[in-house]
Image 1 (cartoon, one colour):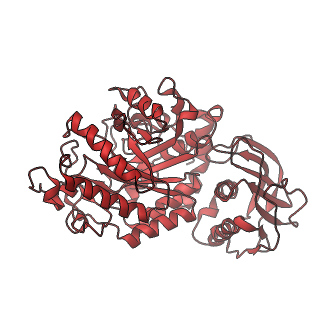
Image 2: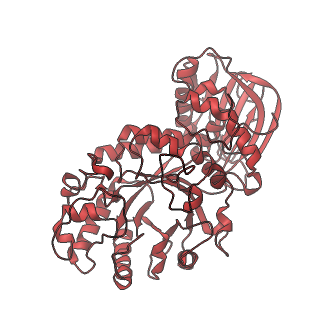
Image 3: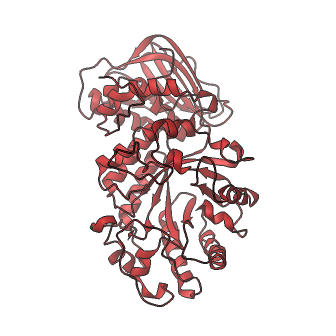
Length: 506
């Protein structure tokens, strides 16, 4: 074993000799804030192994103490939250033939370390039924911490709706890859997907359609809370997006008063963009925003609220700037840090620290680099999502049935892996980048199989760009590790595209 059989690649990996044998007598030692992660690990290991591992939480560990060297007992797994002395929060994983020790600066990174431990086990660990396998973990030493703190995936549930079970399945897939943000695109021209008590027709009328004339759907407040709580159990933050002032036909069709002429447009089931806009001059527009932002913020424990702000082609420049000034002030009043697509950088009146999300190309166009500079000059950071590298709805190849090609044609796995977030815009370095996000727009996707097919394996590339140091990015090594991962994807029953760029096992 010359390279880490782990996705994303760790900062440092050293292979030893021998292995640790996981058995039904293995005990997981945990204390304090490590306890929830220990419970997760025991639950994770149970279906494929059939083991019900005991958890010993009687010990205590000083958060500032040195890493454990002479405990736990032989044959045990020790999970500890405490100072790792790493350059940024991360984890240390040590596997010997007699014990496994995992130490992290906090519970989130302990959970990330568990994902590496999970990947060191035989691929069959991903199975949902008991497997007749020797559960050996190779002896290794791993030192690891993420390049970026924000490692996200976006799911568009507006163009096609996906139920709670599908979103939870997606969250589980994300956690395996150490992704820690799910951006939910909840509203668009084709549908409004979250219930708002003060504006009930948003879902009574605005949620009834989808691209192609499907039935639509929406999340009740209980549904949304279930998603948020499940995400939190995987150390994933949910970022809700209410896209305004454009991409609002579903809202406009539900409430005539949000239109400048007080006439509700017909529901929309196509895939064109840029034709809708809230009425900028009406007071009711800002009451609407205040109500929606308040209710969504109350449901969302995470720090962010995404306001969209993209492709507002039906809004004049003057109106757009006035709208953004008022809308961002309203959103910020509800205690959230704001995110907007990079077009929002046209405004010089953003609340301090507003985060921009870049969705132009690896080589910027249409003044996108100037919009990035605007966010940074106003004290914000950037989330990098270049469409021609990381948009998961782009076709893998021109002959594929699923996906679109507007971002300069198909986006290959090689495209998804070989870009660098800090090399897109001059003057934008790692310190200006909050992280990266891989969006999945769903114009052509309406079921979980197609969703996973478009996501995998490109989301694995995205995860490595987000987590691993630039020096660890190696295309040949990545494709070798990915090929070795094929049985793991199969065992997890993940649908994926066996792209011809990878020498998959027969």
